[in-house]
Image (cartoon, rainbow, N blue to C red; front, side):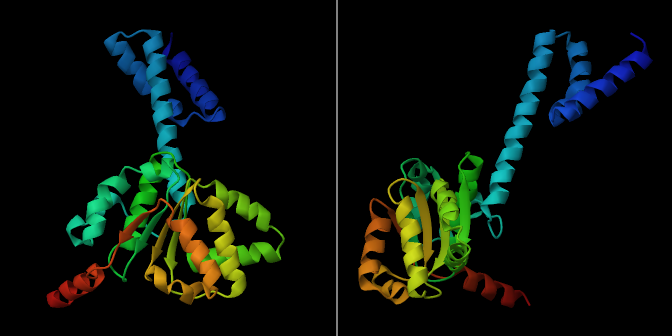
Length: 256
C-alpha cells in the first residue's frame, strides 16, 4: 500500500470513528497499529487493545460525569482527610463507611456535631468515592432542597422531582439545622426523605443533636417520626470535637 493510500485510509478511519463516537479509537488506532506491527501481534489482539482503550476512556468519562452531575460544591476525597484531626467516633467508623457497604444495603449515615469538625468534607469524600464506584449521587444543602421542592410544587412538577430524587443511590443532605423551616418545608422534606428510608441511602450532616431537631421542624410528632425513620439501622457518627478550621486559622495567623 502506498503512503498516499495509507493516509487516505487513516482519514477514513478518523472520520468513521468520529461519526460513531469512538474517541479512543480515533486517537489511538495509529499508535496501536504501529505497536502491533512492531510486535507482530494478530489482528484480533490489535482490535482487542483498541476496544479496551475505548472502554477505559468511556468508563473514566462516566465517572467524571457522575461527579459533575452530583453537584458537589468542591472536590474533597477521602484520601485528603487528616484522619487524626477527625473526632474519635469518626476515626473508628471511617473504614466501615469508606467500604460504601451502607449504600448497597440502603442504610443512612448521620454526621452530627459542632461546626468545623469535617462533616461536609467526609460526606463529599464518601459521595465522590460512590460516584467512582458507579453510584448515582446527589449533593444538596437542605435549605436549597426545600426551596426546590417548594418551587416544584408551585410549578406542578413536584411528582417528577420526587421521582428523580427517590432514584438516587445516595443523597447527601448537608447543613440540617442551620435554618429552621416553615410547615410546608418541613412536610416536604419529611415526605421525600421518608420515601428513601430503608431502600436508598441518605447522608445527613447536622450541627444539632436529635433532641434539638424540634427547633427545625416545630411539629413534635413529625420530628419524632423523622428521627425514627432516618436513624433506623443507620450509622450515627458523633462529630463533636475541635474545629480543624479554627486550628488552620490559628496556624495561618501565626505565619503572618
